[in-house]
Amino acid sequence: MAKGYRLQQKLATLTFDGTEYEGAKVEVRLRISTGAYFEVSDVMKEDPREGFRLFARKVLVSWNLEYGDALEDGLKGKPIPANEDGILEVDPDFLNTIISSWRAAVESPPAPLSEQ
Image: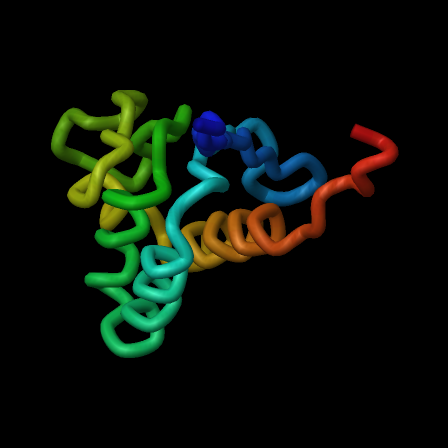
């Protein structure tokens, strides 16, 4: 009996060189099910808050983000958790940048088989 091919986890570290987010690093899953990909995309359109939370559960692995200067409750400089609560602490513009970068990485075609 032939042995099946086991899909391996595929991760990417997104960086934002040359932008206002230079220095930020976000590790994401590139290999998720097609169903999960469409679920994230659909929920983002219908309910962005829940879409961001779903992105955190299904895609986000880690990041190096910290609370910034605008906070007065003693969190300044502390890590923002890379989870569905922490993702809501990040400004929507940056979250949209993260998600756009992730989509571009997921949707980019692999190298031709002759180059692998």
